[in-house]
Image 1 (cartoon, one colour):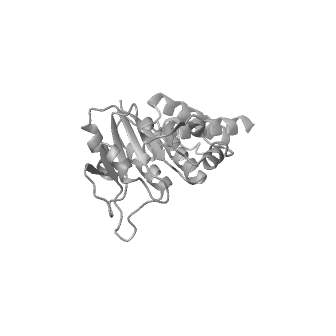
Image 2 (tube, rainbow, N blue to C red):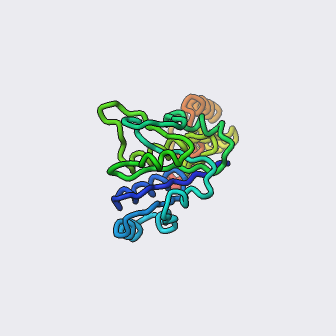
Image 3 (cartoon, one colour):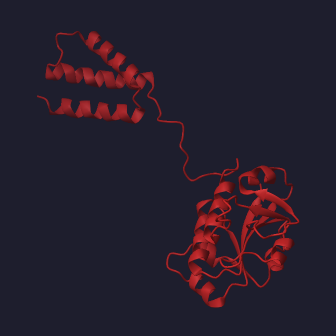
Length: 236
């Protein structure tokens, strides 16, 4: 399984740093490395109220080389406008497809600061370039937005395990559970005098037909059973 680290190079805004850490936490990443942050900004980010422990455990590095020391494959996130890119360019929508072909297991995702992005030297230091496609009028993306978009894209890989998934729908009741409810409802009918002109077998047949058509879940059927029992208990 591949491991990912997010590298922020010379970030300037503590709010952006915090937003990057939250984005990582949202999508299952925890390895944050920060290169040469401005000390007051870094202290403010780490000490922020409610900050994720991703920040408190983040590795603070002097150089990009130090941050990439154990990376086997690194991607520099940058806009392509006014850049002479020599490396492979990977559009964000194709990131997972490209990583599936990449034998490296330790992947570094490198992002520049809010004002100038990554320097040409930073980009050349990485193995490939990651580009978030945008319209030409607005070619660059805010640092925190770039990180959250990239983390979300990574969450679409097959081995990502979300905290909650849509699931396969409600659990249907068994035949035996249906019959328990039908028996409880029939007692209520008899005790309340409702539809006593029908035989017990006829009432049960109607209920079975209704249950088949309604497709109630086990939870819903249990609710109706308890309701029938409660009403029955209140009748003389």
